[in-house]
Structure formats: C-alpha cells, structure tokens
Image (cartoon, rainbow, N blue to C red; front, side):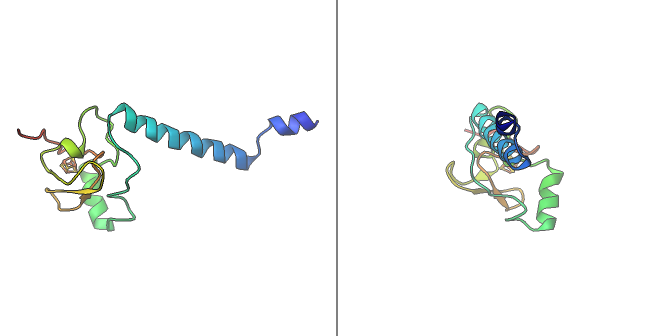
Length: 108
Ligand code: SF4
C-alpha cells in the first residue's frame, strides 16, 4: 500500500510536473529556433489592453515559432539581442526572440 501511494502522484506533484514540462518545452522551442528566451518584453504585464490587441492583430509572439525569423533580425527592430528592444511599426516593446506577421528581413 505504501508503494502504491508513492507511485500515484498527488494533484500537486502532477501540476508541478506539468509546469516543469511546459517550461522545458518553452526553452526547447526557443533553442530550436536559435532565439533567446527568458525575457518578458511585450506581455499583458508590460502592454495595455489596446496595445495587446494591436499586437495580437499582427500575431505577435514573444518567442518566434518561425525558424530564423525573430525580431532581432527584423528590419523594424531597434535594440540588442540580450534585452528588450522596440518595434518601429508601433513603438512598443519587442522581444528579440519574438516574431509577428510584419517580420521583414533586415537590409544590409
Ligand atoms: S515587425 Fe519585426 S520587430 Fe516588429 S514585432 Fe514584428 S517581427 Fe518584431
């Protein structure tokens, strides 16, 4: 009976495991894309509701799911790779690892 209890995860351990897997997935997604992660640049914590709606209209994501296309290598990005920058289109914060449908290759 003791072994049965130890092998059956409680709700709390299940939730902890799920959160750990989610965090790992986010890191892996970022790594597979060559993008940085861990920055929170343009989220509901940093943008107003109307700013969030504007960004959602362009399908903005804090971590790009498109290989090789990130804010940091977008023509409209102002900033560095290791910290939050801004987008010239809307003058709002942008994550260097982010992406939206307005992504445009940087000109040389
Ligand atoms: S236009 Fe470029 S810099 Fe601006 S949010 Fe989209 S991908 Fe990022």
